[in-house]
Length: 60
Image 1 (cartoon, rainbow, N blue to C red):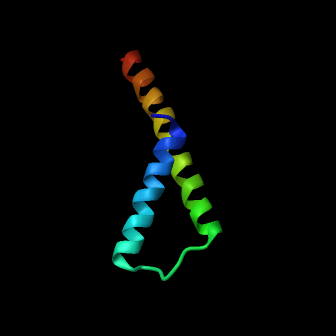
Image 2 (cartoon, rainbow, N blue to C red):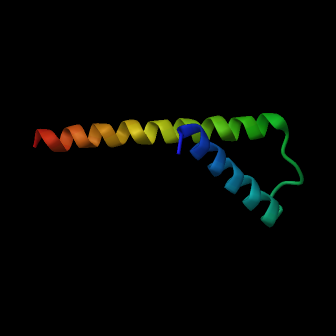
């Protein structure tokens, strides 16, 4: 699964949870885009962190 698909899936879960619990009456487009970009950034950073941990483990 690509990073973009992972981010989309996370945003989809977030929006479903917001709708289910009624936290907000509505989300505007900027909020949805920001949620996607935040999720995508987290997915990309997670992969970078995993590589850094692997390299650190190999040094020891």
